Image 1 (spheres, rainbow, N blue to C red):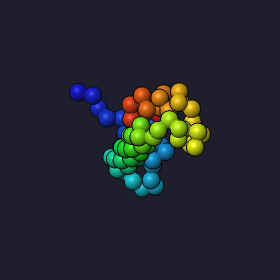
Image 2: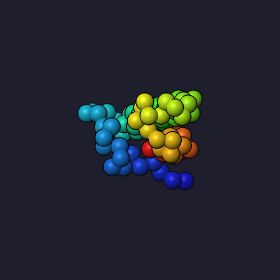
Image 3: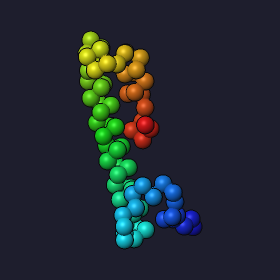
Length: 75
């Protein structure tokens, strides 16, 4: 069985003074889930736009198609 690495450098950004490593990992996981939800919602909104609206938000058709093709976990 693989052990969880609570001392991973990626968790340092979420470290709260005095928080346990488990709490820090949960905060990091919550933050990641929030980012994923935002990306999914934003990309769904882009899919609903008409091509004539793309210049209004400063994007080209190619940029919109590229963005909406990404899965929610990819930045």
